[in-house]
Picture (cartoon, rainbow, N blue to C red):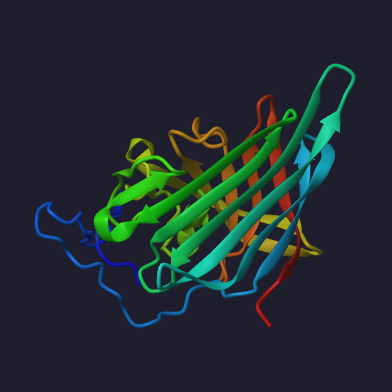
Length: 259
C-alpha cells in the first residue's frame, strides 16, 4: 500500500522504492502515486481504552481511536487520536499529564497530512500544530515558514499505526526514515520477542517492539516497549514509555472494532 518507502531491515532485508514532490521552481517534481484501496488492520471508528499506571500506581486512563475519515486539502484521511489523562500525588512527588495527539493520514498513500498535540504538563499547556505536505516534501509549524521534510512522511502518532501494517519478525531491526522532521530519522523499531499478557479480560499473544525516536521524550533512550497483538488486527495491547521520572504503562482495558 505504501509507495516509495525506504525501510531497511537488519538481518532480514526489506526495501521498497520511494519518492516525493518538490516545490514549484525546484527540480522537476515527482507525483505521489495513489494506489487502489488496500485493507489495513484497523478501520474507521475503531476504539481502544487503556488503564494508565505510573509504576505500580493507578494514575488515569487513555484512549486510542480511529475517529473516521476526514478530508484534508482534498485528500481522504484517517483521523487518529491518542489521549492520556491522569496523575499521581505522592508525599515527595506529584505528576500530572493530560495529552491529546491527533494525526490525519492520507488513506491512499499512508502519508501524514496534519499532526497536532495539546499537552498539559505541570500546569503548563504545550500546543503544536503541523501542516505536512508530502507532495513537496515540506511541513509548516504553526504560522511559521515551511521547512524541508522527507519523502512519504509520518508523525509521532501515525508511526504506531504504520507499525501495525508491516511484517514484524522477531530479531529484526527496522529503520524507518519517514518522520516528517528530518532530525528524528531514522525511527528504529527493534522486534525483541513474543509475550503472552492478560488485558481486557483475556490472554493476548503479542509481539514486543522496542521503538527508538531520537527527538521523542518518551522513546528516545530505547527503554520503551509496545506490545501488539500477534494476529491480523495488530491491536496495541500495552505500551510502556518514559515519564519525567520513572515510566508510565498503558494496558488495554477494552477494545471495540469498527461496527
